[in-house]
Length: 173
Image (cartoon, rainbow, N blue to C red; front, side):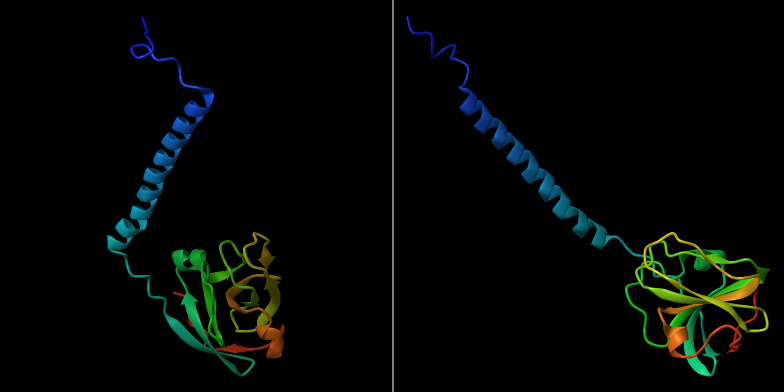
């Protein structure tokens, strides 16, 4: 009596390999389909508008600058993070309530920047050039009230070094 139909022999290793491969491909297909659906679902969710940051027109060694003013702890913490571009003549001014030691870094910041550390009288104390996506600290040479970030090399190109006057600085709140 032939029992092969009732109790088939185990599949050959080659057949088992093909069946396993088909199962893997099917599972990957379902996973890929699920991933494709995620962005559609995410786009349907309402997105909160970004926080509006006030701006100020400054004059650095006589040169106009349009600066976003980061005056709250949350604004200062975020700074220029995740930005991919900065318009010419634009920067970000960090305002501190009191004179203090200030250090900056470039976590999640894609733009190379120069920073000017500015005292309460509006004089640049020192400058630092900062490379993108680093945690290297760049510190003021003493207590300052402001820090102004501009595109890398802006201060050098405008002859605005230590001692240069920055006008139009807002009062800390």
